[in-house]
Length: 362
Image 1 (tube, rainbow, N blue to C red):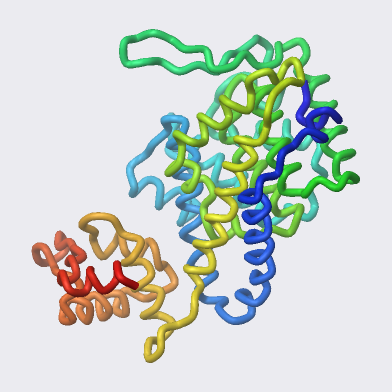
Image 2: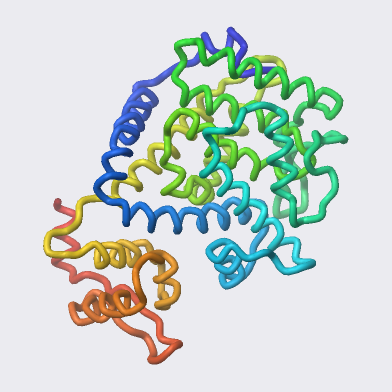
């Protein structure tokens, strides 16, 4: 019942694609300090956007949503949730734990006790029972089909074995650090085993996404500070659930194949570094930093958007500058305004056919 068993570690099949992905992640990691020196303002903008997206996506994966105004109030302005609102309480709890990991990861002793503390504080505002302790009853991972039938995807470790299983997991994870297995693969294996144990009665998905950020920090992969891994997982959630399903089969008998999940996990980290590099990029010739930030935010918008929604993606830029760039893009024919006044929205215009053909031909 462990991905760190010798027979599992010895049988890992690293394809050329997996090796290339690990190499690409290493190259992205090497650029971190360079970006911090050359583009601190862009990084601050990315950081503020990432914490909002991470909090929203991780909770939305569990069916927890709040209006955008409430999300901004709780996450961006760091306000407490409204009394009696469990959804806002869970948003605020995730915000707090993610912020704590970003700021205090160097001082965290990665142990089962740390997990219990993080779980307790994750539900600080929610008022639910069973927080800060291992599950007291057995649970299953299932999905409900459109016809109402229930499919059991996995039966996790029984409740009575959970405390021991988590102790063993952390001991074996620490011991595996002395092997020649790449640390990124070890992180992926830890996440897989955590989810197979499913140690809490509630919040396992959110906990494992927080732990992913923490474990990447421990290996000096800082990308989760600037790019939302949770959003990337939400955007690929079908692959997320499918690869977990594939890699969990036979887990109880140490007969499982972790590689579908490992390949997916590495792909998410690589995608984050690709987005990070694109987000920082090189400033376009003749454009200032503020203009670059606004144009970058426009590129990330889907469908019609308001100036307020755009400003949320570039919070370090003043409102007047955002309006100036929007007008310039409108005059250049790349944007059009829909409506007037406070209710106006903006829409990206499709490029002329000749331009599209040129892009396709490289």
